[in-house]
Length: 426
Image 1 (tube, rainbow, N blue to C red):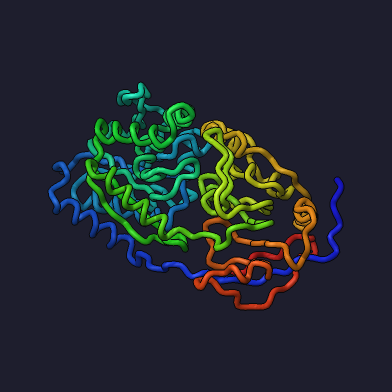
Image 2 (tube, one colour; image 1 turned 60 degrees about the vertical axis):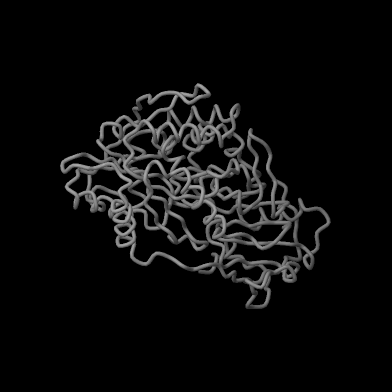
């Protein structure tokens, strides 16, 4: 394979961004406090000792999600209830009951760690139809419970923008809808729009299923829990909108309008539902439309896949260049299943790939055209979830906001003896 020869490499300097660092210190205490306030408000239906409670657990790498789940289990037991966990992740985990249990284990959620059984099935029951005629499905094991607690992180979606995007509504219809619901809603979103499908399916689920309450989780820019709020089922819609606005205020961003080359050390399902967050890269290709927002990035080079992804390399299609090792780490079947469930084959497309970082970067820089080491605009990040410490080329120094500073001189890119970039500094 032809590889362009680069004799003068660009320089990069470390930059530190300052974000709101407020975070929850004691997760169990925070969960107990917000749930207690909700019960004291009188907004919940009565519960009776001995009743069963299904608690959702999704596939995302939410900060201290095992602690959150364990706290909910402990609260239920203190009330004399009988809790169990239902994996609520649509088609993730290879769209199998066993695979979804393994995904939870990778997040630290096991029967031993949370003190409750995990009941996993891909079977669903039909709750009814929305006004658009869309059938709404629910995990059959969750529907066997007397009560259901929906817990999820509230964040920006990667396919659309609306007052409600990814959060409790999405968990209610797509997470608990299992593969059947997730596949159907993604398909029908092409006709009806994703925002409408999630809103209407979520409303029906909250009305028809025995939802006790929702637990909304919001993370700060460092990926740490910032806010935990228990919400009565009838108030989820309004409160989720407020929590999404908070999320967008806190979310990390790249502080530049345009970038020639973005180097992403790792993508993964624990980083974003699309491997790398399109709200950070500004690049999205989808059947619902091609959305390009700031920053405008000319080329993206992705180096590796997180082990937590267990081979699911969804989002690799957003890159222009990658490495053989990422391609080799990819579970093609798992990635394609996820992509097709989301009606997003482009997200599983494999870009140009090379054996080493050096070769891939040579090709990426060559593809920029008439670039110069002194003026090329490069950013290197560990992933799209962790943006406090980044590396940028000197051409971007003048655009740094007051909340970001470069604290060392720029140096040439450092490669190891294997011609791969040295690890991203902690």
